[in-house]
Image (tube, rainbow, N blue to C red; front, side):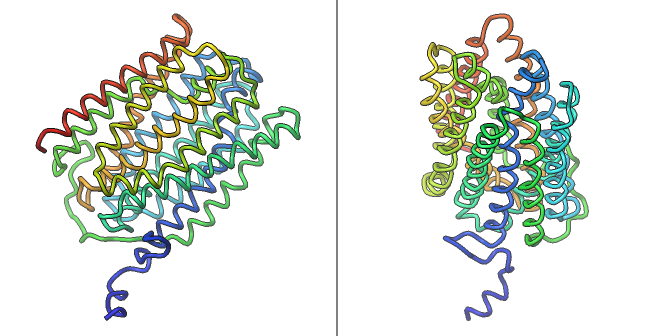
Length: 401
C-alpha cells in the first residue's frame, strides 16, 4: 500500500524534512543563497548613494520606489503567464539569474541613475520569479500545511538576510568602507542560488485550461481574496521603502557599521519567528496573525517617528522583525488557501503586485515628507495606514465571508 501511495504522490511533493516536501526544502536553499547575495548589497546601497555618489534622500526614495514598483507589476504579469503555460520553474530560474547578474553592475556605477538601472534589473528578476515560485511552493504542499511551508521558506530566505549583511560588515572592515568590491563579491552566492534551482522539479496539479481569464479579471476569485487585496493596498500607502529606516538610524546617530548590524538583528528576529508564525496560522487561522503583524508595524513606525536617541533603534528593529514574520509568509499562505490551483500564479502575482504597487508613490511621499516636515512625518503616515488596515481586517474577520 505504501508503495502505491508513493507512486501517486510526485517526488517533488513527498515529505522530506518535518513535513516539508523536497521542492519546498530546495526552494528554501535557493532563497537562502539569493538573499545572502541581495542583503550583502541592500543595506549599503542607500549609504553608497548618499555618501559615495552624493545623491539626495529624495533620489533614494525614487530609486527604491521605481525598482520595487517594477518588480510588483512584473509579479502580476508573470504569475498570470505561469498559469497560462502551466510552468513555474523556467520563470523562477530566469528571475534568480537576472538578480545575480545585477550585482557586479552596481560596482561599475558612478552616478545615481546607473544605480537606478541596476536596481531595476535586480527587481525585474524578482518580479519574474516571485509569483511562479510561490505558486510552486503551494503546489508542492498540502493545504493543511501551507503556513508551515511558507513560514519555512521565509525563515530560510531571511537567514540569508542575516548572513549577507554580516559578510558585508566583515568585507567593509577589511576593505576600509569601500562599497564596490562588496557588490562584486555578492555575485557569488547569487550564482550558487541559480545552480541549486536546477534540482527543483515542476509540479502540475491541474488539467490544462484553454480559456484562462484575462490578466486584469477578478473572475473566479473568492470575495475574501479581493477584499484582502484592498486592505493590503490601504496598508501599503504608508509602507515606504526600508531604506528610510536605515537613513533614520543614521539620522539618530548610528554609524554605517552599526546601521548594518541593526538591520542584521531585524533579520534575526524575522528568521526566528517566521516558521512559528506560519505553523501557528495553520492552527488558529491566518487573519489573527496578520492583524498582529499590522499592529506591530504601526507601533514600530510610531517609535521611529518619536525616537530621540540612537539606542532606541535597536529594540525597534528587533520588533520590526516580528511584523514581517507575522505577515510575509502568512499572507501568502492565506492567498493560497483562497484561490484554486489553476489561478494561483495569477493570484500570487496580484497579491505581490498589490503589496508593491503603492511603493513608488509611498516612497516618494516618504521622501517628500522627510524633506519638508522631517523624518517623523514619514513614519507617522506609515503608523496610521497600518493601524487602519489592522482595524479593518479585524472588523472583517468577525463578519461572514
